[in-house]
Length: 247
Image 1 (spheres, helix red, strand yellow):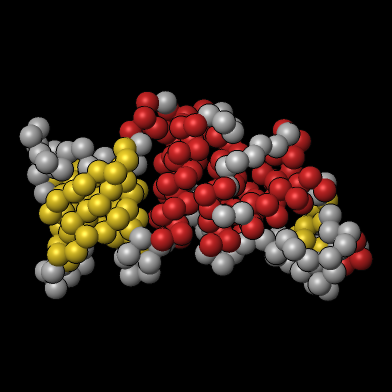
Image 2 (cartoon, rainbow, N blue to C red; image 1 turned 180 degrees about the vertical axis):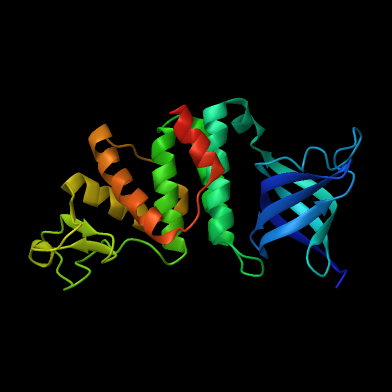
């Protein structure tokens, strides 16, 4: 205990403590999601002031304690503070952080998760694809990283590789026409929607946001991904509630 270590991560959440301090939740590649106390971070001349903001990425030198860490020094690599200047975009970014915090845990390395959050923040700032599509892509990819991805390469029941235009949340993935026949709560998908789901699941994290889709295909995949989120995630998110009220 009390040893110092350097972790690389993104600040997911910030809460105020007392008159001058902050409590940070940081997603790190090395230690997963950790709680870090930034003493004096709210003082006007604090060296932690810039690094103790939500959406900040950097290297954090922390001292390990019994139940949390204490911030000792910081080196900012990338500030995503611009995400806070637009209410709707800030809600999207906050939701990505809330969902990430739900899935990650202390002591379990989160390198892929950190990369996913980083490229998703970049995509939100880039304006090349709609924010709502970024949200759906992020949800599906994060579920896949955490072992809850959609089975999309073959029929989840018989293993067939053809006529895969149906999906059932309960079954966990795509169904061929034969296996889908007679089942309840089955959704039909277009070829374009199936292709898009497969692309998201198989693409490298750095290539996730290099495409866009029609509004019709977006509605198809969004409906499916939301259904899977509702099935596997047993929590409501404040940022998502606010986002839905805005949109």
